[in-house]
Image 1 (cartoon, rainbow, N blue to C red):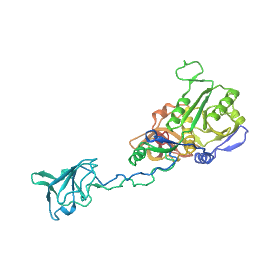
Image 2 (image 1 turned 90 degrees about the vertical axis):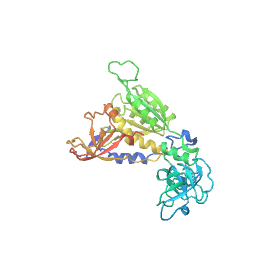
Image 3 (image 1 turned 180 degrees about the vertical axis):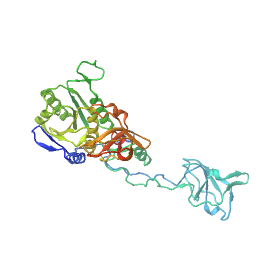
Image 4 (image 1 turned 120 degrees about the vertical axis):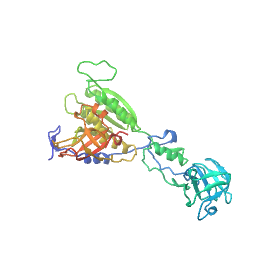
Length: 411
């Protein structure tokens, strides 16, 4: 079934599927990136503008994978145990001497293998007495030796261009001897909220007022992406105030995000103000929650108009604004992983839109929260991901459903 809606001009248009809407958005990204250098300790969350190259082999030399004894295979008895004297002791960081013929070297985890040795016997497999070190039969060539360059080769290209650096990436770069990186300068994202009903936390509550959750939530989401927030606060519900705020936002940021005010009511001024400064497309997405989404440009600066309801704002940000911003930042856009999990619920009334249910996954099963109101954000806080219900689908308990962990959408 195709659901249709009327726009402001009363023309009937079909809803846009989620995948198609995202493709249209990403195709419209225009990047103008600035490259800067940062040292490794400040590189977490930054996006690579140049692929780093390993400066050394990792490990730089053959080393021992455990505490034990280094030996030359040529010194061992072919048919049985061997007793050999200890000729040196090698700790991690030592520069070993060549292994004396017909001897063993006491060696510790991570220590460099002495030349002439070609096997390590773990200490639990030997005994030591006045006669020497008793080695068992059956020792294999190169056993317990981590070869030079096993992890990385000198000159090897490491993380790809556009990679957002995580903790493990930082460790890899450090192991390769890299201390400076070329990264893209973080984007500046302007946020503004519309609605005379909004109060900021800390202000006294009053009749007809609510606290502004979207401002705090968007600030956190943008910060998690490693971008800078330009907070323009709450904008009065007038055309002049909205137009002025948008002009300031376009001049001071790389992208604008507004919440609310994109309808066609008398107090909704975002659409008219954007139209006066650029263009705004009002999209209706085949999505629940979050059907209304506005996208356009203000004096050349892209703008997302997210729904005012906080759960809808969160989900539309994750599905559309986040990948757009990632590409705008020069990053690699990766489709979030979905996992097939067992439905511990029934969804017997099919809908015409793809539905994203706030849910909690535990021990192989997933259960949505009963209240999925788009104005209810607490369920998103208690959830650890979203169930994806295809349009026109019916779900029986015990069936497999798609689940996207919030770790795929919010980091």
